[in-house]
Length: 95
Length: 477
Image 1 (tube, one colour):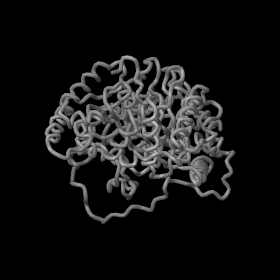
Image 2 (cartoon, chains in turn purple, red):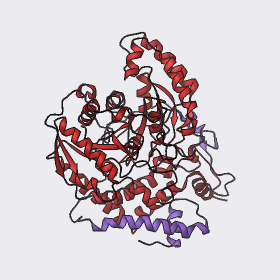
Image 3 (cartoon, one colour):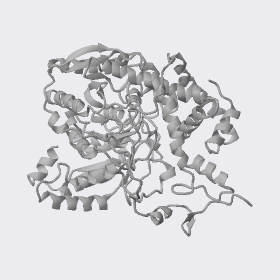
Image 4 (cartoon, rainbow over the protein chains, first blue to last red):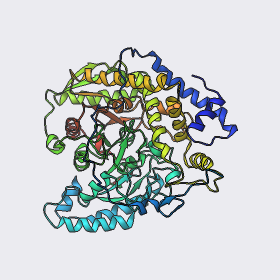
C-alpha cells in the first residue's frame, strides 16, 4: 500500500502529531513500506475466521461497585504542568 | 539462588550485596544499562532486608539486589519508559510487580534502560542512548529489555524485571546469554506497567538460570484485582516442578522456526541443544505452524494499533512533557507529542492510527485479528501432540550497533520467532544454548497457556546437564 503526503497529513492530524511539511514525504515512504509488510496479510485464508482481539477470550472481570482507591487527587494534580483549584488548566479553547 | 543461601548462612549481608551491586553498576556505566541508580532507596531497602533475615522464615528473595525495567511505576522514583515524554515523571504509586518484589524484600538498585515505550529490538530507541552488550560492547544487547539483560549478563545483579510484548524479554536474554521467561498473558499483573499494546504486554524476569527465574516468577505471579485482564487462577509451585525428569517429554521442533533468514551457526547450536534434550529422555517431534510467516505482519498491525490508542494519553495536560508556549490546545497536543516522542514511537502511532482509521479498519486491523486467530489455532493444533515447541529465539546472534536501526523493516524481522507467542498469549522461555561467532545463542521453548512450570522444569533440567548458562563475558566475575 503506497500512501502519499496528503494521507500522512491526515493521519498525523488524527494522531495529534505535529509533522513538518518537509517530513511528509519521507514519512510517507517509511509508512508505505510498513504497510507493504502488513499487506502480506492478504495471502491469509481468513474466510469464516472470527477476529481474535484478546489471547484468552476471558470473560469480563466483575467487582462490587464500591470505591477501593483513596482520594489522591492532589498527588496526581501535582504532576500537571498547570493545575489550579483541583482542575487541570489548558490553553483557551474559545476566544 | 546461591546468594540467598549465603545470606541465610550469614556469609554476607543484604547491605554488603547491595553495596557490591551499586559499585558494579558504577563500574560499568559504559554499558549505559541504567537510567536511574537509586543508591539511597537501595541501601534503605537492604537494611530492612537485613532485619528481616534475622527472622525466620524470610522470603527467598530477601536481600537480593535487582533492577526494574524503567517501565514499571515506582512510587517517588522517576519512571521514564526511556522517553523524553516521561523524563520528568515521578509516579505517585507502585506497579503491582514493584509492590510484590518489595514485599519479598528484594532490593531494587535502580531502573534499567530500554527501548522507548518498549518499542524496539536493539535498545537503540532509548532517549537515554543505546545499551551495550556485555559480550561485545560494539553490539546491541537486544530489546526492548536491553538494560535488564545487560545488567544480568555483566554480573551487576542476579536478576532484573522485564516486559515482553513481541519478544522483549526473550530476544535480549538470547543476545546476552541469559535466561528470560515470558509468562502467559495475564499471569503477572500489568497494573502500573506503562502500556504499549495491552492485549500483548506481559511482565516477568531475566536471570542467570531457570531456577532463579522460577524463584522470581513465584514472587511476581498471581491474580490482581487492579488489572482486569489478570488471570484469576492459582499459581503453580514453580520450584517444586523443577526436579521432574524429562523422560517422556515430547518437544515439537517447529520447522518454520528454522526457515530462511535463520543464521546457520544459530540453527546448529539450537539443533545441538535439542540433541541434548533427547539424551535427557525427551522425544523430538517434527511440527508445523503453517501461518508462522504471517505473525510479523499481523503483529506490526495489532501492536501499533493498540499503541496508537494507549499513547493517546500523552497530551501535555496531566503529566509528562509539555510543549512550551502553546498557542492553542491543538498546538499543545500536537507539539507535545512531536517533541516528546522519538522516531520509532511516532512511526508506530501513525501506522496504528492508519490501521484503525475509517476505510482501512477492516483491511488492516480486523484482518490482522483474524490472522491472529489462525496463529493461535496453529499452536493449539501442535499442542495436541507435543508438550513444548522449540526453535531458535532469534534468527541471528547480537548484531552491531547501528547495523539495523536505519531500516525499521530489518529491525522488525528480528522478531520473526517471538511475536507469534504474544499473539497467542502463550508462555515461552529463552535459555542459553551455545555460541555462534563467539556470541550467545538462545533456545526458545514455548508451552501451552499457564504451563510456566513445564517450561522452567525443561530449562532447569537442561541447565543441570549443560553449562551454557554459566558462561560469562570476559572480565565478568
